[in-house]
Amino acid sequence: MELIFYVLPIFMIVGMVAMATVMLRRSQQIGRAWENGLTAQGRCLRTYTTTSGGGSTSVSTSLHHVYEFTTLDGRPVRFDEAHGPATVVEGDLVTVHYLPDHPEQATAHAPARGKLAASTGCVVAFFGVGIAFCLGFMAVVHIVFAESSSLMP
Image (tube, rainbow, N blue to C red; front, side):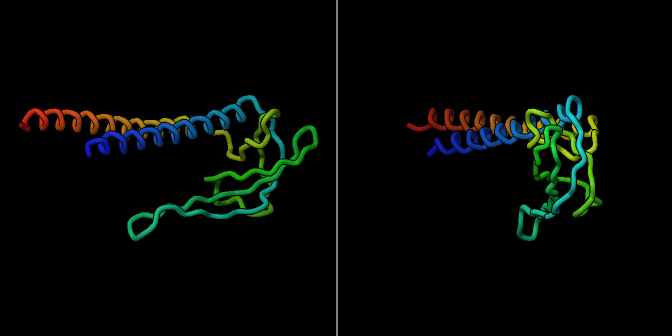
């Protein structure tokens, strides 16, 4: 019975580490594209929104853009990017930043290194607090079960 009090927090920790890793990896890709990448003129092909959450408590909506651009060597590349500006609509021309060896990881976000660092730091801190809570919970559960087993005859 007490195994569930250890397994569930471990699954939560693994999930938080995975999500933080994905976030850090994408932030690195965007930062490298801004710093060392090439630029090209791209076109917004489509916009759409996704929603997450539900019920009557909270719903989160994210605006996505589908962009297409041509690399320096003439290859057309299409990519989807979340959290773009609402002012970009279908048909608009945008500046795309990409690395020549990974053009599919391009970004159409305007360079904002401070904003990227702040948002990445906040997300990592959030997951860090979640992981610390899970570890603390597991420690308290361990102490409670150890004390309760010593009280049992």
